[in-house]
Image 1 (spheres, rainbow, N blue to C red):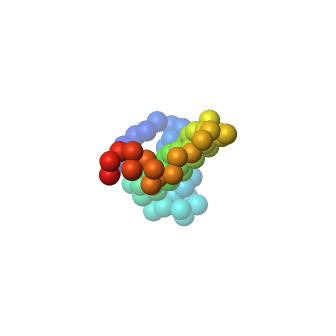
Image 2: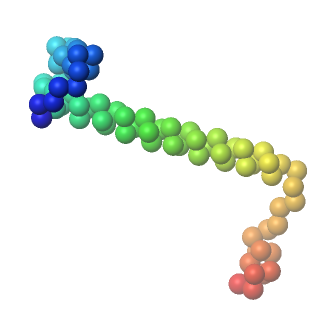
Length: 76
Protein backbone atom coordinates (compact mmCIF):
# COMPACT_ATOMS: atom_id res chain seq x y z
CA UNK A 1 0.00 0.00 0.00
CA UNK A 2 1.52 3.29 -1.02
CA UNK A 3 -0.51 6.18 0.34
CA UNK A 4 0.62 9.70 1.10
CA UNK A 5 -0.98 10.63 4.42
CA UNK A 6 0.60 14.03 4.68
CA UNK A 7 3.88 15.23 6.07
CA UNK A 8 3.01 14.82 9.77
CA UNK A 9 1.84 11.21 9.47
CA UNK A 10 4.59 10.29 7.01
CA UNK A 11 7.13 11.50 9.60
CA UNK A 12 5.57 9.23 12.24
CA UNK A 13 5.61 6.29 9.82
CA UNK A 14 9.23 7.04 8.91
CA UNK A 15 10.20 7.16 12.59
CA UNK A 16 8.56 3.76 13.25
CA UNK A 17 10.39 2.22 10.28
CA UNK A 18 13.68 3.86 11.29
CA UNK A 19 13.40 2.47 14.83
CA UNK A 20 12.81 -1.00 13.41
CA UNK A 21 9.26 -1.29 14.72
CA UNK A 22 8.01 -2.06 11.22
CA UNK A 23 9.53 -2.85 7.87
CA UNK A 24 7.32 -0.70 5.67
CA UNK A 25 4.41 1.74 5.58
CA UNK A 26 1.78 -1.02 5.35
CA UNK A 27 3.12 -2.73 8.46
CA UNK A 28 3.10 0.55 10.41
CA UNK A 29 -0.53 1.18 9.41
CA UNK A 30 -1.54 -2.39 10.37
CA UNK A 31 0.13 -2.03 13.76
CA UNK A 32 -1.55 1.33 14.31
CA UNK A 33 -4.96 -0.10 13.43
CA UNK A 34 -4.46 -3.05 15.79
CA UNK A 35 -3.49 -0.66 18.59
CA UNK A 36 -6.48 1.56 17.84
CA UNK A 37 -8.80 -1.47 17.89
CA UNK A 38 -7.48 -2.48 21.33
CA UNK A 39 -8.00 1.06 22.61
CA UNK A 40 -11.59 1.04 21.36
CA UNK A 41 -12.22 -2.28 23.13
CA UNK A 42 -10.69 -0.95 26.35
CA UNK A 43 -12.75 2.23 26.15
CA UNK A 44 -15.95 0.23 25.58
CA UNK A 45 -15.21 -1.97 28.61
CA UNK A 46 -14.51 1.13 30.71
CA UNK A 47 -17.77 2.78 29.63
CA UNK A 48 -19.80 -0.37 30.34
CA UNK A 49 -18.21 -0.62 33.78
CA UNK A 50 -19.02 3.02 34.47
CA UNK A 51 -22.65 2.51 33.41
CA UNK A 52 -22.98 -0.59 35.59
CA UNK A 53 -21.61 1.30 38.61
CA UNK A 54 -24.03 4.17 37.96
CA UNK A 55 -26.99 1.78 37.76
CA UNK A 56 -25.89 -0.02 40.92
CA UNK A 57 -25.66 3.33 42.69
CA UNK A 58 -29.22 4.18 41.59
CA UNK A 59 -30.46 0.86 42.94
CA UNK A 60 -28.73 1.27 46.29
CA UNK A 61 -31.18 0.99 49.18
CA UNK A 62 -34.02 -0.36 47.01
CA UNK A 63 -35.77 -3.64 47.72
CA UNK A 64 -34.57 -6.55 45.63
CA UNK A 65 -36.94 -9.35 44.59
CA UNK A 66 -35.45 -12.87 44.41
CA UNK A 67 -35.30 -14.37 40.90
CA UNK A 68 -37.55 -17.25 41.97
CA UNK A 69 -40.24 -14.73 42.94
CA UNK A 70 -39.91 -12.91 39.61
CA UNK A 71 -40.31 -16.18 37.71
CA UNK A 72 -43.27 -17.16 39.90
CA UNK A 73 -45.01 -13.81 39.27
CA UNK A 74 -44.38 -14.22 35.54
CA UNK A 75 -45.89 -17.66 35.60
CA UNK A 76 -42.70 -19.40 34.59
